[in-house]
Length: 453
Image 1 (tube, one colour):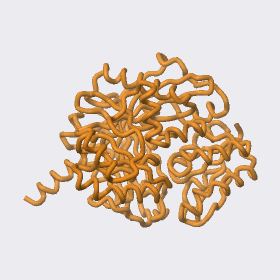
Image 2 (cartoon, helix red, strand yellow; image 1 turned 60 degrees about the horizontal axis):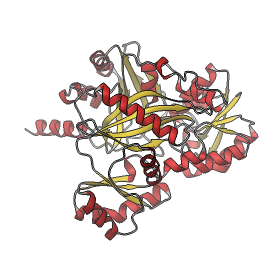
Image 3 (cartoon, one colour; image 1 turned 90 degrees about the horizontal axis):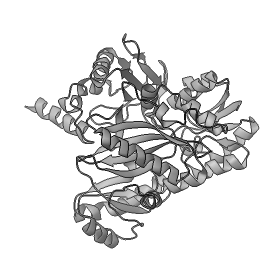
Image 4 (cartoon, helix red, strand yellow; image 1 turned 135 degrees about the vertical axis):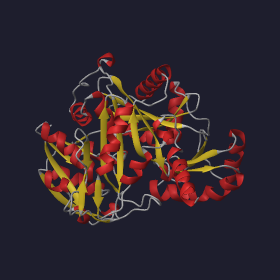
């Protein structure tokens, strides 16, 4: 593999470029008008304007990207995450053009991109799933009948797409009626498919995912888990590994289920199997993300592996660099903090120009930033501007290190959640390691109540 086109932007494009340079692979970047001055455009060996700012006219222009890849004679396309990373048609068109798609087979993307199909696949494979419906709901009457059998509260979900956008909690029949048509409309708008289904809402749950990796020879390994339970609006903002307060016996069963899930779909390249875990440490399959995750540096920190390098090697036809599970170990404790250009109270995006960016004097931290001083954060894309990865011998030491970083870190010109993280690290609910996906919201509510006293 000599030349790779990166069908993405920002910090993930920089991340891929970094590994490609290490492997002496040339890179081709694409950018919209708004991103012309971003660092990744300058760091790539070649860069091309792909269109105006709206993603539909730039980063999602499948045919234009493939045409550029052919013209530039690249060997492969790395989709990063988001955008076209889980688009089976894009993967098929790349392969039809003679270009390797760095990711799983299109058939795997397609099957795992449909939550109902993936639920059925996991049931057949013997992987536990959340109680729910096994087919799309075509009417509110059918939804109410299904919900009455499952029992409230339930989660109303889009079968296509992922993240917090495609789901909503319904506590009773009234809220189900209120949200049924709106979630279908949202699903159609965001994911091009209005099929929805129901799952039982697991109260006080945790969101734990397992990094898996497969090659074309059928080898599959896991690279341990990440706890992604610190969320706002059902979207992750802080991940850590290992998961605190999680028995080793349950952890081993979780890994076995993740590998079983991957083998059930002949998984190739990097992927993540997401589980929801209840208070008794019982876990249920949520979905499989058929791509590299935003939080992959957490796994890199505890294993010492470069997952992008693994992706490139497997895409080139090589076997997994380490396929003996017993040779893969987890060392120390790692956190990843997602830094957003957003109001820390309302979580509304805060576009603007980054005037100053300072990460303090604490050494040994990893910062992956999509922007530098002088760059403009526009309202066209996700407002995540950087990631801070902390690694230490144990969880307490990692928290202490993070506290030092956030006590002096500054980003000026846009609002960020840096101070929010600094304060949240002191929350006893977080420090204890005994927390669920509601931890951040509950802590913020406590803060508001204390201020109002």
